Amino acid sequence: MQLDYTEEDDDGNQTQNSFVLHISRDPGQREKVQEGDTDEDEEIIAYARVGESPILYKITQEEYYALIAATYNDLRHQEVLSADFNDINQIDITLEGETYTITTDGDADDRTYAYEDEEIDITSFRDALTALRANSFTDEQPDQKEEISLTVHLIEAVNAIVLN
Image 1 (cartoon, rainbow, N blue to C red):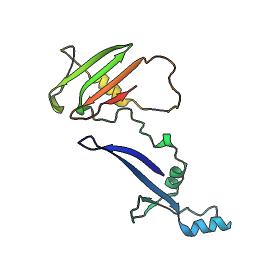
Image 2 (cartoon, rainbow, N blue to C red):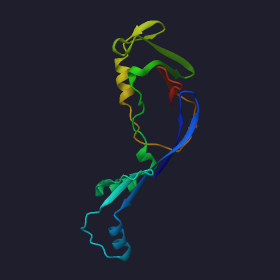
Image 3 (cartoon, rainbow, N blue to C red):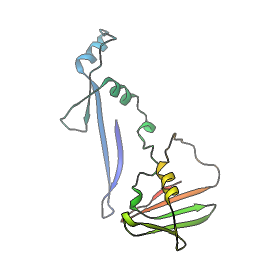
Image 4 (cartoon, rainbow, N blue to C red):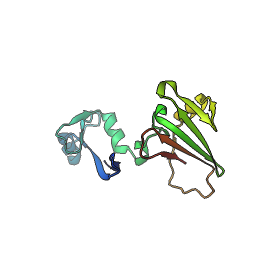
C-alpha cells in the first residue's frame, strides 16, 4: 500500500512524500500456497514493514485480511473535524450565500465565543461538530447549489479547514 501526500513546512514550501506499508505472508507459507500444499486450518503468519525500515512487525491473521482487503475509503478518517476545538479561533458558516462568523477570545481553558460581538454558548454546536462522522464517501459531483459551508480557522495555522 502506498499513500502519496503533500506536506507544507513553516515557510509554506510544499514537499511531495509517500508512506509505504509492505504487507506479506510468511515466505514458507506463501510457497506452500503456490504449490497447492495448504492446510486450510493453518493460521496465517504475516508481516508488515513501513517503508524501507529493516523492522518487521508480525501481524495477526485478522489484521492481514483486513489490510489486504482495505480500500481507499476504509483508510480515510471518519472524523469530519479532526482539529482540537481549543485550537479554533474563528468559525465562518455560510448558509444560502450569507456568512455568519463566530469569533473566540481567551485561551483554551477560559475561551469565550461571540457572534456579532455578543457572547454565545457554543456547547451544543461544539458537541455536534466534534461528533460528526462520515459514514460513506462518493465520487459524485454536486448538481445543485451549495446549501451550507463551514470554514474553521485554527490558531497560528497557515491554512483553514474547509468543510463543504
